[in-house]
Length: 384
Image (cartoon, rainbow, N blue to C red; front, side, top):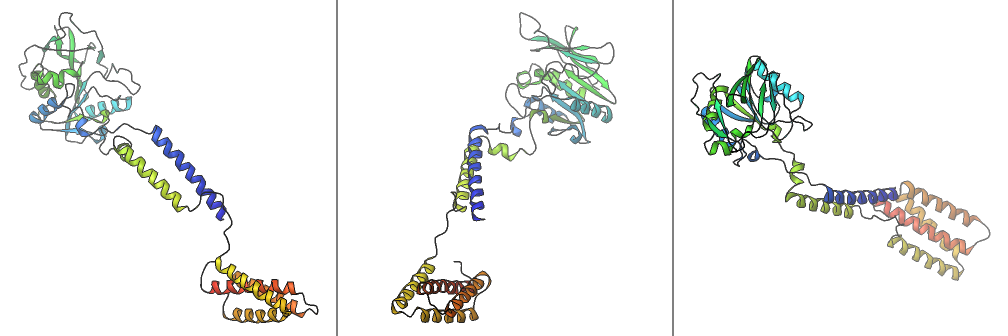
């Protein structure tokens, strides 16, 4: 039993060493994104913090969606999806469109958007297809766009403005309408009815980023877009497709940044604590006899040798046998008791023999002395 436990301890030790080496060499996950890294909170040029603040000031409320559309809440009337970094699969797209159709809400889609396989999603609805085009115009990187109000109760006046735009929306013969165009031919933004709600598509989400709104190139269009989608509604910015999680994984936190080294050191310390607790990791070796047992054996041998030289070995054997029998009456249990009884019976048979063997007597004296010590220690609950 002790050998198998020692062997298991040795195997577990080496498995732990191998696992630690693998963690140190291979495990370095990306840190989870925080709320401040959400595009709707980012103040970088390509973030949407300015547009998020505009919505917060002009709409009934604003929040961030960190889960599926089924968790959006009944009070939300506008869902904003602006060029997410993670793909939108067919299930998510159908879930968004079903929400629009059943709730009467408005979905604002900012291209480019990719599917779950990394391919450009060029058709979000049946009526509007997005296509990536070369940047219009060769003399200037900015394009002059014209706004056509469609759904706002009191349309804002938005003079033609210039922004950098890539792509356009190809509309079908019926359904979607142009909201923002270049020279009244290329559609840059469209709106279409979908069930009881509406879908607004932007050919390029960068027309709403911090660079475009912060320098007041497209800020009037952004204000008009808020009116078109519903200024009296609660808006939600989709951050679930940006990798923002409401409860980031603790393992990802510990496996990245400065916490990675701390975690590896803690695991290494735990490994050495296990090594220390397992006592021995090599092959098991027989435990040496206890010091007290050696002392008893030496004393019995000396006594036997004395009586052997005096020619009185049978008398010494009888005295030790009597002492062992007295000890068995007072103490002893289990295996120790049985060993003592066997030694006493063997000594009694030896004394009954007509011919005495002094060397045999010395051997039995030593054996009974050890049994007597075993009885004494077992009665005290000590381990040999």
